[in-house]
Length: 461
Image (cartoon, rainbow, N blue to C red):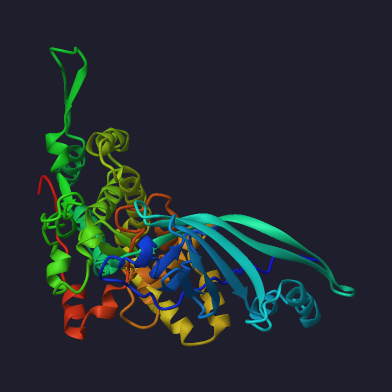
C-alpha cells in the first residue's frame, strides 16, 4: 500500500493576517520576509498561508490550513534572498491517511528532529523576488510505502516545485451578492421588455462600423457605440486609480469602496485600491463588471447572429486590456449564472409553487425530499443536467432559511470554483491582496456596503 500523506485532501486555512504597510528592511541588507504568504503550490484551491516572523537572518512561522491544522517552519535567509526552511510534519498527517502508529514511528526515527519530538522533517528551498513579491523554489518531502500486515516498507524523497506570493494588504468589500442581484435585475428588466426593445438592446451590444484606412488600406473598426452600450455602473465608475509605482508623490485616486469603508479597506493603496471581493477572491471591480457581458449573451441567444457578433465585440473592447483573460472568465461566469436565472424568470410562478412544496418536504424527512424530486414534472428532470438545474433553482428560492434567493452566492459553488481556479485572476490585486475587508468594518459600515443598490445601463432604454 502506498500513501502520499503529505498532500492532505482537506487543505486548510487559518485566519488571514493582513498587512497595511510594505515590509520593513532588516539589518545587513537581508530582505524582510516577515508577514503572510499565499501558497500557490500544486493546488491553487488550497488557500494555505505561511506566516513568518523574522529576526535578522532567522525566520520562524507556520503554514496554516483551512481546517485549523498547521505545520511549523524554521530556517534562515541569505543576503541574496535565498531561503532554507525546515518543515516539521506532525503525527496528524499520518492519522489523516490511516497510517498505523508503528509506521509513523519508523518515519520519525528516520526523518525526525530532536527539537520537535514526534515530528518528521521536510525541507523547503526558496528564492525571494522583491519585484514579483514571490518566493519560488522546491519542496522536498517524502512518500511512505507500507503494507497493512507487515508495516513499514520504504520511504523515498519526493520533490515538487512550490511558490508563495506575499500578501500585502486588504481587499475591498464583498460585492458578490450585490452583483448577482443586479444581474438578476438586468435579466428581469430585459424579459419584461417588448420584443423590439429586446432586439434593439442586443443589436446595440455589437453596434460597430468598419471603414478602410486610407493610409494603410486596412480595415478600421469603430466600436464607440458598443463600448458605451452597457455597464454595471456601480462597478465600472469610480474604481479609483493606482498610485504610480514609479513616482512617489503620485497619490492616485480613491475608489468608491475605499471611501465607503472609511479607508479601512483597499489598503495599501498600491496595489489594493482598485479592488473588491468577489466569490472569495480579490478582483478589480471593472473586471467583475464583465459578468454583465456574460448574462447578455444568454438573453440575446434568440436574436440571430448576435452571439457571433458578440465575440467580435468582446475582442474590439478587450483586445489591448491587460485583464483580457480575467474579463473573459467573468463573462463566462455571468453566462453560467444567466442560464439559471433566465430559466427561473421565464417560469417564475411555476418554480415558486414547487419551492413551497419543497419547503414542506424539507420539514419532513429525507424520504419526503426524495419523493418530492421523484414526482417533479418530467420536463424538469429529463436529464441529469436538467434535474441539477431544477434543484438549484428550487433550493435557491425554497430553501431554509426563508430569505434564501437565487441571487444568494451560496447556491453557486461552481462559480466560486471557476474564479478560484482561474489561472490569471487580476494579477495586479488577487495575488497580493487578501479578501478580509469585513473583519475591519463596524456593523453599521458593513450594513451600508451590503445595502448598496447596484445600478446598470444597457442602451437603448
